Amino acid sequence: MKIKSNIAISDNGFVFNPVTGESFTANPTGLEIMNQMRRGASAPQIVETLCNMFQVEPTQAERDLQDFIEMMRQYHLLTYDEE
Amino acid sequence: MPTRKIYERPVIKKLEGNMPNKFGMRSAHEPTQSIEGHAVKDLINEFGSPLFVISEKKLRKNYRNARQAFQTRYPKVQFAWSYKTNYLDAVCNIYHQEGSWAEVVSGFEYDKAIRNGVPGSKIIFNGPDKTDSDLRKAITNNSLIHIDHLDELYMLQDIARESKMRPRVAIRVNMDTGVYPMWDRFGFNYENGQAWDALNKIMFSGLMDLVGLHTHIGTFMLSPNAYAVAASKLAHLAQSLLNKYNHEIKYIDIGGGFASKNTLKGSYLPGSDVSPSIHDFAEAIASALMNSDYRPKTPPVLVIESGRALIDDAAWLLGTVLANKRLSDGRRATILDIGVNTLFTAFWYDHLITPAQPITSYTEDTALYGPLCMNIDVVRENVNLPLLNRGDHVVVHHVGAYNMTQWLQFITLRPNVLLIDEEGGKHLIRRAESLDTITSQEIMPAHLAHFDL
Image 1 (cartoon, each protein chain N blue to C red):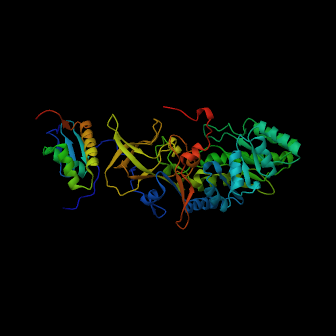
Image 2: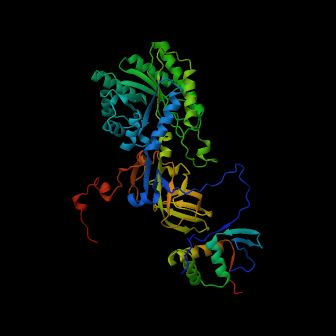
Image 3: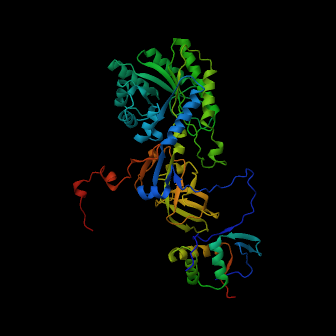
């Protein structure tokens, strides 16, 4: 599961899908998760990074990461193919 | 180790290219961190969640504002606090201290008013359910009995004949004021002559003192003009009594039903924009009475039974986020410890709900559900709110009317009610219920007392 390679993500959280023309906005935490995913980090690694960066417990970070990924899936921003 | 930043739940939101809102309205998300000088967090820590909080200062201010609105437009005005709107003793007594009489609609409410120390002669007894013993008590106490139907009128005549006492009565009149649906289930109809017939019966019987005329045209009324129509019609009845019997009534009771600033479900614009002010209602009613063709030697007292407009914005319901979840279609849902059991008016209003802690600029659409394991427990179907986490607090606004009387003891128990006085002092005015509150009313048959599992 990865972010589709054609999705553009700006430094301030603006997300653009050139295929559908849809655009999105992510908050700093969301942007950090997307950047981590782009770097190929696994879910446990992302949780660890979030806990190091923010005042959050691992359980909450894990729960919120799961929800965030679900939202990205709903918005068709993810691919499940091996690239 | 570097300082960790404040955490905000990750969120991604699709940017919609919808039509711009022609009214230019934005969703306001100012957090409500304190109420009457007390931090929401501290109040919840001390008194639990959910928690009703009532401001005495605001109650008195609303009352004085309404009284001024009417008294500057009409010479004789008397308010009567509508017990059914909120009959917590402390709340009632604030209005009584301000000079309000009591307006009750059941034997229970009547007894509550007497218990609070309201003189019987200053209790207005409305409603379709007055028992024989209720009526006898009210007659003995010289209360103002507003007759709802002919059966009640005949019952009163029988009691008066038998007891040799003269009840002080008015009739409730229903009428077409141009607002639909018309409330014609209470009282006697004006247009078809029922009201005039009832008045003739009272006058001919010679057993009762006809002291007033009453109407209550609806609830959450958004049209001041409807009250002008109602006042004119009552004035016309009063003049008819003067013409035929040379009898002057002492008061005209225009009822209540003035809208508050809440937003009715389905309303395009918020209540704060569309609800008329108390001055609009006062102007319509007073002008209609003053300009009517009623020509008494002594102008009748104008009685106002407003409840909601005097209390709705003086109370808040504080609650806590229990959980966040994602529905099958991707919509967000937030579960609160506030449900329709405590916030009964969620059935009618899209309540304003604000977070109680600092927020960022990010928001999301979410459904707000209550804690009940029932599908009906929806506080808001869809509302745009800042990101809320488990344990965060929220504040529901404008909850003073009808919630603390219509709340349900359903699935869970009812919470504490706190009054904050004019100096900021905190007073618990209704304790949260406990298991004992409920079970003390139950009686277990001996053969059901034990079981083996």
